[in-house]
Figure 1 (cartoon, rainbow, N blue to C red):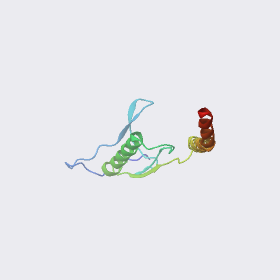
Figure 2 (figure 1 turned 135 degrees about the horizontal axis):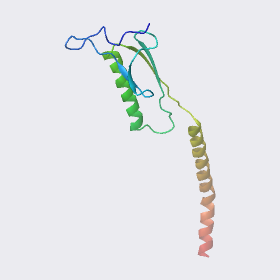
Figure 3 (figure 1 turned 135 degrees about the vertical axis):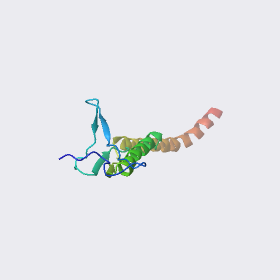
Length: 129
């Protein structure tokens, strides 16, 4: 049997029952009552986290804060027990390619400096003559 509407065992500040949680089904464009798959108050929630290949930015923060607010509403207002999991992908092809590129750039700079030192001196002497 499907779980009863969320929050029926809790009450609002004025003592009335909490309304049930409804979500918009984007396929049917209709509001539907939220019912956890467990049939009780346990909610499993998985979200994709950042792929760390560059500096953090406000877009990352927006996701963390936004999802944390929704989690807190589910737990504190509606009384759900949320198991919240976010992955963090710490390496991918972009990171590997950037490391290779930086290593190659450093090698080229070192080679340029090694070759340019004596050659610049010889070129300067040749131009003086």
